[in-house]
Length: 195
Image (cartoon, rainbow, N blue to C red; front, side):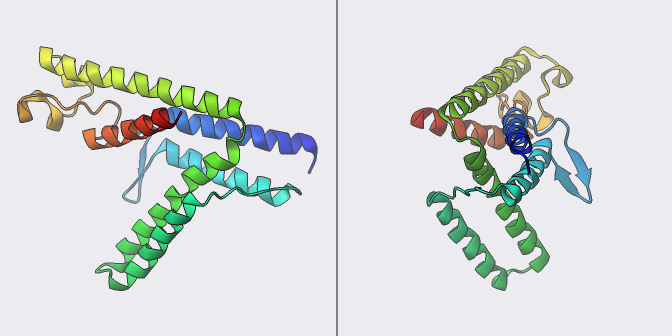
């Protein structure tokens, strides 16, 4: 493998990570249903990133895999999940959930392999926070738009979260439900505290 190919694989991985950061909050946009599963753009990009990283690690002679010890706690969690399969009422569901949790380990693993410089980290955090500001602004548009009576087709707010249900609207922004928005913003809180 030539140096140019290695560099281009690194660039592809970087662009995949940037694309994941951008599309992560847009789970309702571009998702498709396949065999009863909702496949999101961020998941497809993560899968592409994992394949490119695997290709990169296989053919790079001096490849190093960075696996920090905090991810070992997640491996212990997955180990507990494997043990819990023994008592699962519906084995297929248990295996599916365990596979999904294992797939989610790929997110921090991929980020740690690709974001290796301070410049990349700074850019990633800036992009992450900028996208979240857009998401929050859209959420406030939903909140105040519903209060003043704008149509849900304009605000994008689900009927379940309109002011008629609890007396006040619950913003969901680009997410399927407010809980997902809250979890997404919670990640930003910790990123900003650490940064």
